[in-house]
Image 1 (cartoon, rainbow, N blue to C red):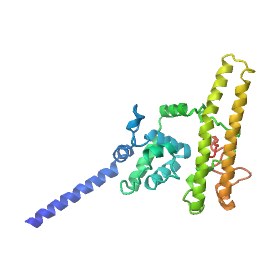
Image 2 (image 1 turned 120 degrees about the vertical axis):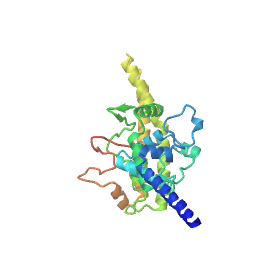
Image 3 (image 1 turned 90 degrees about the horizontal axis):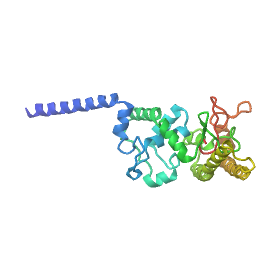
Image 4 (image 1 turned 135 degrees about the horizontal axis):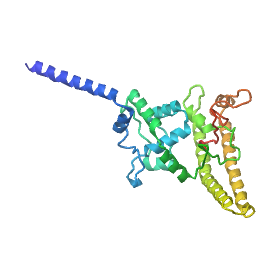
Length: 287
């Protein structure tokens, strides 16, 4: 009698676990996100930022999409990073990592199938247009024909090296050593610091000049601002060029050729040449 009761309890438990497994498999990406990620990552920007325990998901998604414009690349990065987070691959600003710490690995908390659904849900739904516009205003970014206006003097044709290397960071065929990775991380941080210093000034000065001339201002009176703008863009462009130079010095000629495959005199994928009708530039992120 006792054995029969134990068998019934065990069978009931197994059936319950089976039901939960089926339910988990049937959950949508949104449901999985709420269950697995929602306790830390908010989906909206709160009025009181001190309540945050992790960056809101719209901001996270924006950084991911800036680094990986193609959906499959963005999804793959989220899947990989959630299981193997590291400072050298993080897309968050250093201040965010200092505040929140590095995201803990989700190994054991989510299955590969669930993680894929979650990643696709994030990429498909975040950030919305209102958040993007707000972020652009905060960062001093301007848009033209739906694309960010480059603050550099050379706006096309230069490689986006940090993005390319991030995509292939652990690619065995590229074979980056730990010493190379440490140097590349230092170059990236140095470059990003410089860009963040000058870029908002460039965008603000461009707005000032545009508004002044379109409202009846004198071109001669704007000459000092134009000269200042030219100097700022020159400094930004030199930061960009030094990033490329230093990165090339860290890589072997073979490694550099692998990330810059030339075809008929044109740069290959992942560089600043036109791709699909859009242009990219900058050594750290899409400007």
